[in-house]
Each structure stands twice: as structure tokens, then as C-alpha cells.
Amino acid sequence: MKGNEAIAEAAINAGCLYYFGYPITPQTEISEYMAKRMPKVGGLCLQAESEISAINMTMGAAASGARAMTSSSSPGISLKSEGISYIAGCDLPCLIVNVQRGGPGLGGIQPSQSDYYQATRGVGHGDLRLIVLAPSSVQEMASLTAEAFDLADTYRMPAMLLADGALGQMMEPVDFSLFEKREVPEKEWAANGHGGKRKKNIVNSLFIDPQELENSVMKRYERYKIVEQKEVKYEEYMTDDADIVLVAFGITARICKSAIAAVRKDGIKAGLLRPITLWPFPKKEIGALADRAKAFLTVEMNMGQMVDDVRLAVNGKKPVDLYTRTGGMIPSVDEVEEKIRAMAASL
Amino acid sequence: MVPKNGAPAVTVICGHYGAGKTNVAVNLAIASRRTGRATYLADVDIVNPYFRAADAAEMLRREGVEPLIPLFANSNVDIPALPPLLTSLIEGCGNEKIVVDVGGDDGAVVLGRYAEAIRRRGYEMICVVNRFRPLTASPEDAVEGTREIEAASGLRVTGIVNNSSLGEETSPEDILGSVPYAEEIARLLEVPLVGHAFIPEITGDLSEDRRFTGLTLIPMKRATKSLF
Image 1 (cartoon, chains in turn cyan, green):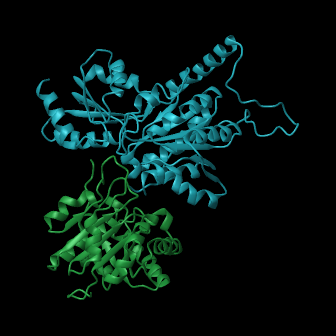
Image 2: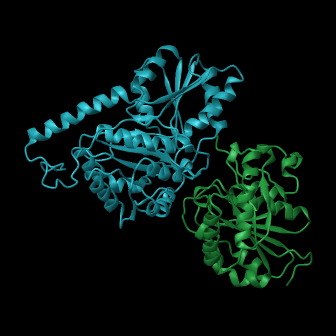
Image 3: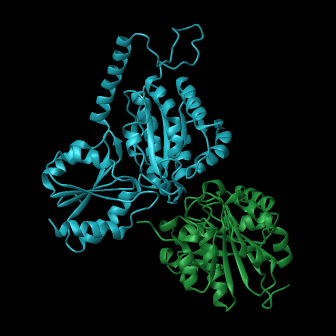
């Protein structure tokens, strides 16, 4: 099925019964699929009047304890950013999907990875983090969607699936049973009606007393620390003996794998580390590779954003080179191959 | 107005999005050209941003098929502007074959603008079905989708092509298992089942597989290129 449909179906399988969307290419199939399927499973698909409404409806549904999600593409995520910050400030779990397209501004409708900074640094105001998952196949569009809901519920925080237009539009077979289901805590905080039987639950991100706000942020950061310790996900491909380690996420990682297989035939020892969680970022793992490898190459569909995290992880131990295309252009296998060959020649 | 070789001037390829319409359309256009008939392939997909017939333009030109592509296909301009030559061709009276690759589902609404001329000209409308697409996985759902396409386009489906596929992972058994599905859709729609499409590069040559004896097979080439 299509990547966008896989997200929608996986979300429904994960018990998400509330979807709030607003159409934008290249993710509209998510809304379309939800509109067809949700009524059949007793759920709700609502096309809001704007992205801002959609994210705030998602916040409302999440506050009631339901599994809720919204999806958009780059400019739409910018519009949602205020709501995302409120959701983080209210400690609410939900899923936000960004099927990225070229930017800045209205940009274009072709695939891109240029919202890396936004997803991992600045998706809303205030001190906050999102768990950011980067699928690189239609299968992962499904399995990481399922996992994102569990992670969000476990840590009471919003999770983002950061995909791109190519993954959203392309078609591959999917097995919906392929993910690790985990036990998630009861939502005792949910504002779902106390019925006079328990204390009121209040969901809120406003703190009048600055000390109280600092305490709440610090408490949240304790949780973020646990996420960083326990939830880093990545894939290594031929890194055991690699002199050149490529770092790429999403669709770009697929392209890198083909390039690596090609240069390996000529004896060039290249490998790939693919971050699956962009936050938490696999810092330690990249740091460990920096002790063995001779050089790094980050490949991205933007002007070089993740490369900052790679450089922090490598910590100056080895050179970190960069190959990028942007504006909706996708690097070809040949281009990446050529770049690796040029690096190998100068090692 | 009936073309000299008897086959209708216009062949419309429609279906649920992702059913594999473009692959079928591209291969059918090439097959038509190989009979010696001037052939155009019109990509009138106004709903899909990428992975479309425009991607196969080079392959089509190599085969002598003239691709007619929306003016802004594969660019960042999300405007469904169709080429004026398409109107001239459909409203004309030459002997050429025009294969029209339509966008998925209600993307067929674009045909409404040409429906009268297409009807006048003589047409066949082939609905491509794929059992492995979740929203058309049952014959009943596929028929419902087909009826919506007919309503949107103002044209009647005249035949179906079974293109049940799991992409690169398609096995002969997958296609074999989809035969009753396709036959049931044809029965419900009361139109002929034109055949079962497959890509020999992926499944091997099914015409040599005895389990397919008696079935009409449509071998196809890959019309779109992988990114990786």
C-alpha cells in the first residue's frame, strides 16, 4: 500500500479513533483513508477548518485520554507549532505526522527532509522535546506509527513521525503485525469525567507561579532523560569494518545503502548508521563508530541539518563531510556513490 | 469516425489510485504503437503529485509513443493544467490511438470535460483492479469504486484488467490467488475481464507456468524507476 495509507491503517490498528486533519500535498491520502475507514471502525475523522484547529482538536481528544492524531506537511506543521507546544506543556500523548515537502515558505510539493531542525529543535516555543521517529520504508511507516503511540503514552509526551513525500507516496507491501507492542500505563490523569467519584483532573499548561513552572519543566526533563537513555533506535548497515560511515535517515538511507553496496564491490569499505529516532539521537553509537572509522559522510535532503548532531556525536574525532540536495530534489544513488569514491580517494 | 483498424480511438485507463494504472497505460500505449498505429499517451492525472506517467516520458518517446503531460507535472506548481493538444486530438478524427491515463478514484472527474467528445469518437474504458490495495480488497469494494469513477467521468467501464500486485515482492501465487477476485468483479460489472497483468522481470514468465493455462496474460515492462 501507499506510505500515507500505511500510517492511517497502523494508527487505527493502534486504537487511534480520533483523527483531525487538513489537506496538504503530499500527505492528503492520510485524511482520505481516515475519512473512509474511521466511520467503519466507530472512530472520528474530522477535516478541521485549518491546521491550527486540527492540532487543538487533537489536544482536546488527547486530554480526554483517547489516542488521537493529526497529520500535515511542512507548512502545515509550522501552523500547528503553537498547539504542539501546548500539548507538550500539558504532558499529553498524541501523534503528529509530518510528511515533509520542500521549503521554506510555500516551498514545493516534492519530497524533502528540511524540517529536521524544526522537529528536533524548534517545533514550538518553550523548553520541550518530541519523540521523533524517522521511517525509511512503507513497512516502517506502519510499525513506527504503532510504536509512536506506545512511546507517547509511556512518557506522556507528543511523538512525531517525520516522513517525506517520497515515502508517503510510494507503494510497498506492509505487515501490520510487525512491531513490538508494549504495556502502557493507565491514563489516570485523563480529563474524561470524574462522575463525582474521584478528584477532578485538570489538563493545563499555564502556571502563574514561575517556581511552579520551573518545577514542572524540570520534572518533564527528568522524563526526557529516561527517553534518551532507553529509547534510542537506529540501524547499522555494514559498519563493522567501515572506513567511511554514512549517516542518513528516512528515504535517503535507502539510497545510501544502494551506493554502499556499489562501492563495496570495488573494495571501498563504507557503511551506514541510520538513526530511526532523531530525538533521542544515537549520539553514543555514532561516538563509538568515531573511534573505529576514518571519516563520516552525512547525506540529507536539506542544506545540512542533522550533520550538526553528527558532528556533536563525533566530537571532532574524525572529519564529517556532507552531501545534500534540497528543494524537492532527491539525491541519486550515482551521486552518493561518486561522493563516497571521492572521499575514499583522499583517505 | 470509426478508425480504420476497428479498435476505438480512445482507451481510458482508470481505477483506484495505486492500482497500477500508469504501468498498464504505458505498456498498452507501447503495444499499440508497435502495431504501427500513431499513439499518444495522455497523463491526465490531476490528483497525484508524483509517481506518474510523466516519469515514463523518456521510455515512451524511445518507443515512438508521444507523451502528453500536464504542463506542470512533477514541478512544484500544484495546478492541474492539461495540454491543449489533448483537446485537439480527442475532438479530431485521425486514425491515431489515444491512451488516457487517469488519476485515481475521483481524479476521473477530469474526464467529464472530454466525455462527450470521447463518446462521439468511440472508446473503451479499462478499469485496473488490484486485490492488494486495502480499499479495493474485496470485489464489492472494487465495484463500488468503479461505479464512483463512472459517475465522476460520465463514461462507462467496458472491461477490467487484473493488476493484483505486491510490487517487487509479487509472486506467481499472488496473481493466481487474485484470479477469482478479478473474475467476480467482471461478473458484477457485467464487463469482460481483459486479462491478468504481470511483470516478467519480477514474477518470471507466467506463460510457461501451467497453472496459468487458459488465462489471458498481459506481460508488462516496469514503467517507473526506483529511487534507490
